[in-house]
Image 1 (cartoon, chains in turn orange, green):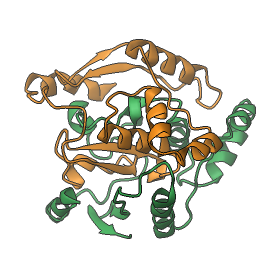
Image 2 (tube, each protein chain N blue to C red; image 1 turned 60 degrees about the vertical axis):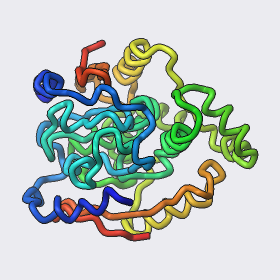
Image 3 (tube, rainbow over the protein chains, first blue to last red; image 1 turned 90 degrees about the vertical axis):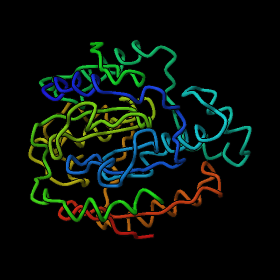
Length: 151
Length: 151
């Protein structure tokens, strides 16, 4: 992937490794995955200020899992895990039926590298993705600004 | 939303309104929605080069709809619509059972502003999102770099 060769330059001058997980400005942006949109630049989002969700067409229905997790992260729950579901059920009793009817899966991942490996494997074996599509998995470290290839 | 006040400055010097929808470098990046990640900067993605999908934890399972649409967009289908599903079924017969079993909804939107209004409405009325969360809907024009509030 040609773009990734530019990561060392970014990491070498990276000085934002101290930022906290909760977005400093307490908002999230849902935008389209469209290559012609650079949300940070176009909407003036500083690093660490807001969660940015991107999908085809900026669909809120498709992004519901991430929106719910993001909202929980702005509150007291600070990790992506199945506890988000529990916290939601405890804090909002009317959410129970909605979660149940939507069968919303939060896809928690206790082990990061394993999750990346599993995801790449699932894409490579999916009949929905042509075999000719090259797929790789990487981990980005928010403390250093560096990416490392996993698979 | 404080960030959006910086959009006019971005739009005033915007000169990339001619970019085509298909990503110039023909790849997509799936990353976490984490506020501490700026994909364009960290991974060296130029405007128009690649689709960028972001969700909680960079989950490929959760992003499957967007990945499939993106892959189709790199090919012959050039619009987000139900025709993507048809194209997929025509080009890859083994995808049929997979699509069926996953009940993958592509959420096509024939009318942009109506889609934004409907999405905001669905979030405001969802038991999964606390009523106190302010929600607004905007349209970003790739030709001008400008955002306009819809709702």
